[in-house]
Length: 241
Ligand SMILES: C[S@@+](CC[C@H](N)C(=O)[O-])C[C@H]1O[C@@H](n2cnc3c(N)ncnc32)[C@H](O)[C@@H]1O
Image 1 (cartoon, rainbow, N blue to C red):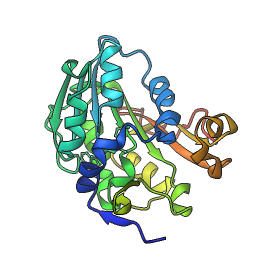
Image 2: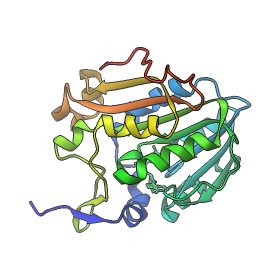
Image 3: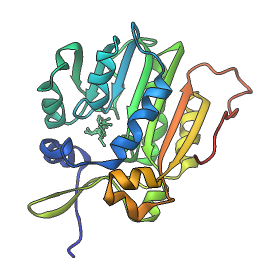
Image 4: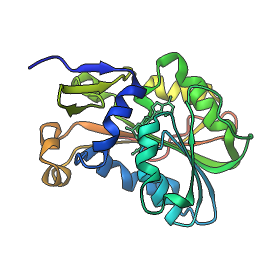
């Protein structure tokens, strides 16, 4: 089998956009209920979705009564999002999250970033988290999900197939401690950390996930912008579920 073709993250997603929603991606199905649980009720809230892609979360959250702003640096992913029903209730912005976010401090009650972290290079993780924190209200919540770093050990990162074979938008290997330390270093407090293993129920729905049975595949961080100093590493209900 030929080596996967590695593209820049942006070009990779531009090329993936047309088929992203139709690939039967088990990680998305695995992640969605965790995002909803971590965000809690969103009606009436201001929500920012960073790396919103084809709008999977943003449109659902807007339909739950939130005022949603969604940013992504892939024009093609955003074009797919904008073409969907319900997209008219979301404010879509083309923006690279490796640069300062174009919002005033404290603009949002919830700041979400779903499955983007693996595309942020190690030195940029801390400024990335710092921006999520800055735009979140003091009593708000930052929710970040990621493909579990254990997947890197299996040689797995975001990928798709096109007519040339397997393609990978660039990802950067990191560990859980890299992610957690970057968030803490950015002044965020850890409210809850959870890791989720592929189980039989998921494998029944997605045959492709069966080879990962028992492996942690998803990682979710619930963060607070103003957790009391000295209590930052108080992890509630962590551990592998
Ligand atoms: C795996 S997709 C996830 C999309 C969406 N959050 C979801 O969960 O369905 C990753 C997304 O992050 C976006 N992305 C990666 N790096 C980014 C950056 N530096 N700035 C903005 N978007 C970025 C990609 O363009 C892509 O749309």
